[in-house]
Length: 409
Image: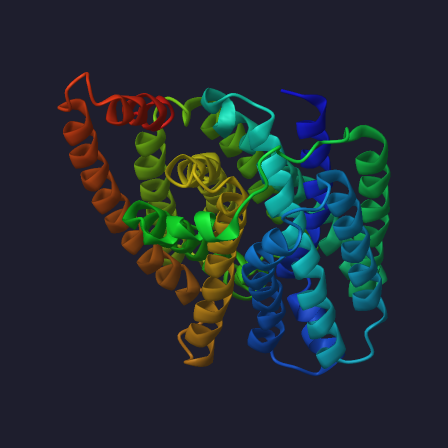
């Protein structure tokens, strides 16, 4: 792996901490801003909505700009967004700061993913993405629990200040360690790349990613009130339990990144199935402290075990559009991160209780599994058609080699 890929992963640590730390701060923010916990949960959705809109928008807007300059600008705007959040006098301004931060975060993800993929061979795409996603895992191991700890002892605003400092450190790393990356000799053409959205496999990949991510974060976003209000665990243990989710995420990312290039569909099916089982178990045993602690860890493993495969799959099926592929993956993940917390909040508002968010999440992952099965069926059908082409059809033969290299199952 090039050093630049690891620097991007370290930068993602700051981005991921900001995105996910609210799961440990919802109660404090709700009390300070005089809003309900489900409404505070919409701050998570606000960030995700900004990511959904920002990823393709900024990928297009920066299409012909130098990659390093773009990354420096975006991480700077992101850091300023954290400062604005820390100083927000009311809910509306805090909400707006989350959207602005998310736009910058989305752009960084989209450009950073494209840079990482461009620097490695096709057979190492999942590993490269695993390094970047590893930044999210570390954010869950260290950043999110640290945010919850700061929120409990110094107030929720201190967590935003801490992420602002982390963003400044990331900025230094990008400026000093990311090399100048020349733009391709042939300028990207947006009209040509947009054609990928006519491909059924690209659309299916978007749906799979959104449902798989949304299912887990439907429950994870409200894990803190489940821990304290349902399982009856003391609030001082929330940060440690969220840390267990992060440790599981780091383990899952490491394993998934190593096996996804060779067994992509196998990783998707096994990982999403595991998430479904763990979500159902969380719904059934939410009142058991031991079960909640163990399942927090296991959900981290299963959710992030599939993440490298989800990223690599999109780049495989949308290889003709390297600019939009990364942006589309980012948007798809955050479609799930938008729908999940919203769905969970709807369940809570309907008086089904905090534990019911796990049932809602399981429903989303079941749909994800069905979509994976459909994608696999189409993939097998396509592979048989291409394989049966005569050797003289060079185009079809080349497609088999490229398509099959990272999508074996």
